[in-house]
Image (tube, rainbow, N blue to C red; front, top):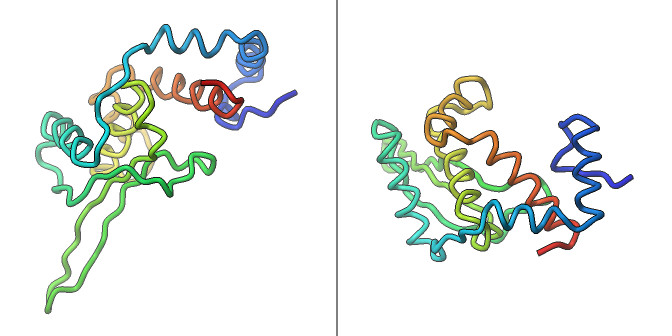
Length: 165
């Protein structure tokens, strides 16, 4: 029985169904049919503009972002798909903080909906640090189908890990 690390928290019957789909080669085509649209966000500048547009639409009163970039050092295998950090610097007698969002480079080639899900997740951390009820309520405010996208993203990562396209 193959361990499905991205689906570890899900019930065993669901994992068994995913294993069956993987074994029959149906998972990749199902995801490709459901999410056929790739995104055009290739550069860090385009990513910054994409994130800023979502932030302006849903989180106007939140702190400004100093940097948004794709990060090749983020390890998807260690469950880091994106990061949100606050970098503090001392400038004279003042402490200045800037916020950064980094997205794993694997999302350059991901379907558009998966990039949106990761960006929404990281933007929600601007308001809520913990993964609690308020955090997920904010995520679903920005992307109504957030939970389905998160599950499908886990399926997509599982497919990639098993050697699928």
